[in-house]
Amino acid sequence: MELRRTRTWVVIAVVSVAAGAIGCGGSGDNPAAPSQTTSSGGSGAGGGGTQSGGTAPAGTGTLTVGIKDTPFSDAMAVLVTFKEVSVHRAETGWETVAFAGGAAARTCDLKQLQAATDVLGVAALPAGHYTQIRLTVESAALYFENAATAGPCAGTITAPAGTSAALTISSGAVKLNRQFTVAVGGATTMLLDFDGDRSIKKTGAGNGNGSGAAKTAKYSMSPVITVVSVQ
Image 1 (cartoon, helix red, strand yellow):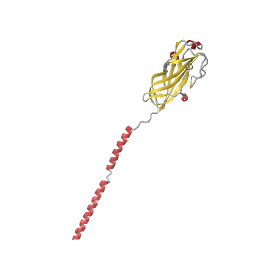
Image 2 (cartoon, rainbow, N blue to C red):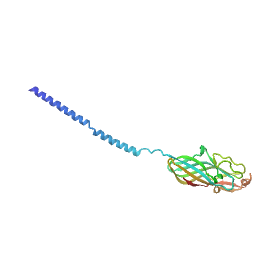
Image 3 (tube, helix red, strand yellow):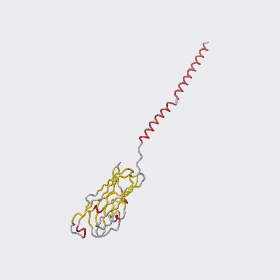
Image 4 (cartoon, rainbow, N blue to C red):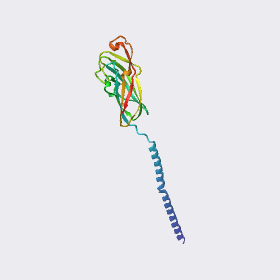
């Protein structure tokens, strides 16, 4: 009798232990909790990364600055040397427009630009909105007897022979307010007009050396430049 009771209790104990093991196993393998946590974390991180991710670097476009002239009528050649051309980008400031061949300066004969246009500079610039162009004239001179044999614009132009007069430049920096946009992958062309007749003034008698106009007068230049078009 005692033996039978003992076996019964053993069976009950074994069944109880097995049932408890099954119940614990079901709770530990529940997939809902880790699945829900991963989804929530992924959504938060992914959303924030997309919204606050860094902006791609700005692209570039090409700007070509050309020049023509209404020339000074009392000379055979008017050589003007430009030291710098730059444009102002609203977002970042001034950007330099390089001269051809990476030259430090570019000289133009305004007389030859009366019937032609030439290029001052070409640059790949950051795309964006631009508000100004700035030109700096380094030196200028008049030649009364002979025309220049090269030009209209070059890194250097050989001075013609004969009577000449250096121009006193009162202010070599000229800023022009003109808004334009450089588009990504686009090509923008700006044409300038350097008005020689309005820029050059006779200021007084010469020093008696030389001959012709150089002997009798001195000249000064205050560059008058306008933007003809931007395309």
